[in-house]
Length: 141
Image 1: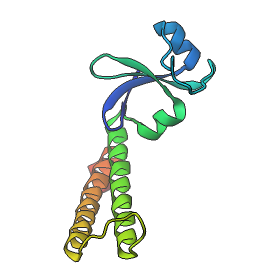
Image 2: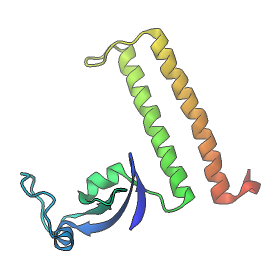
Image 3: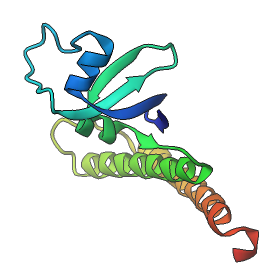
C-alpha cells in the first residue's frame, strides 16, 4: 500500500468493491441503500488504528493525495494552502456582497481574513522554494 494524505494520513491501494468483499469477508455497504457493483473501482484504506475500509475511487481521490516522496508532500501542502486561500477569498467576496446565507462580519474581521490570506501566501512562497530545492537542488536558486 502507498501512503496518502487527506485530513489524516492513511495507507491505501486500488481495489474493486468485489475484491474488497472477497478479501475481507464483509460487505462495507450491507444495510445501506446505496447501490454498488462488484466491478466498481475504489481503494482499500487502512487507518492508523489498523481498521480497513473500502472507499469508492472518486470519493477517495477527492480527499487524499499520494505522498510517496518529499516532493509529493510539498505538492500536497501547496494544494492545501491553495484550498484555504480560495475558501477565504470566497467568504470575503460573499460577505462584501452581503450574499444570502453568509453571516455578516465586520471590517475588523475582514481585515483579519486579509491578513490570514497574506500569511498563507507567504507560507506558500516558502513551500514553493522548498519544492524547487527538492526538485532542482540549491544551485538552481
